[in-house]
Length: 178
Image (cartoon, rainbow, N blue to C red; front, top):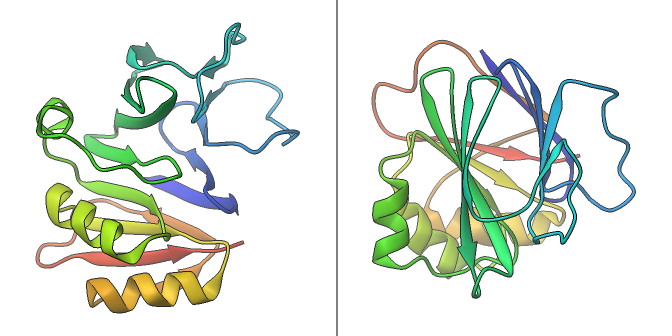
C-alpha cells in the first residue's frame, strides 16, 4: 500500500515503498531523520546523499526513479516504479512533454500533477492516461477550474492511500490539499 500525503502546494510525502520519498519539498522543509529520498524539481550543483535533482536513472532501496529533464535540464519531473506501480510526478511550472519524453516514460498508473493551467493539465492527462489522477493544489479556485476542464469530480483529502489494485474501470481522481 502506498500513501500519498500533502505537505502543502506541490510537495508530497510517499510512504510504503521501503523508504519515505519526499517529492518537491519546499525550501526549509523539515526532512525525516533517516531512510528517505527527496526529489527536487531544480538541479542542485552539490546534492547531498538523500537528494536527487538531476535527470537520469536511479535505484534506491528497490525504488526505480527516472528523472526527466525539461527546459534544457533546468527543471526535473520524476517517474517512480514501486509496489508494482508506475507513478509520474510532474514538476511546476507544467511543461509540454515531447513525444520522445512520453515514450521514454511509457505507461503510468498514477499521475501526480499540480492543478495549474487547466488546458495543459487536460492535455497531459490525455497523453499519460493514468488510472489514478492526483491533483496537488494550493488554491481551491485553480483546482476547480482544472476539475471542470477535465470533467472530473475529486475528493479533497490531505492523504490518499492506494490499497491493492488500481480502479478496474475509468479513472479515480483525488485532490490533495493541506
